[in-house]
Length: 115
Image (spheres, rainbow, N blue to C red):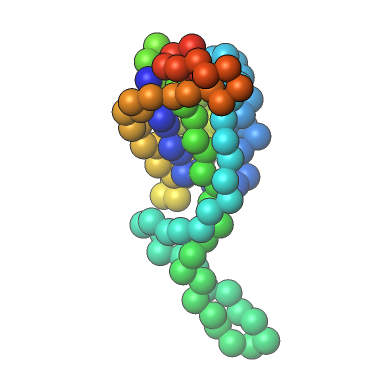
């Protein structure tokens, strides 16, 4: 079992959800987050003064999956989240973490059956 955490652009969320449903990944958690990577934020003008915005709005996806769904899930996130053919700085990151245990609260099921 793995936990996939993906940090993506907010405007790519619907495309990624569609790509995930095509590979039969339907369960995910979505969080609004802020951060920056290589793009280091941007500047905006407010009442004539330039203000540095160093934290950009992002969306974090958390997806608990069984091992056989890892690669299709990664490919779906890349397909839906990449800007253009080559992609751009700021398209996001995918982290794959081992998940030791999962427990379904309602039934007490554990492991892969609980996902």
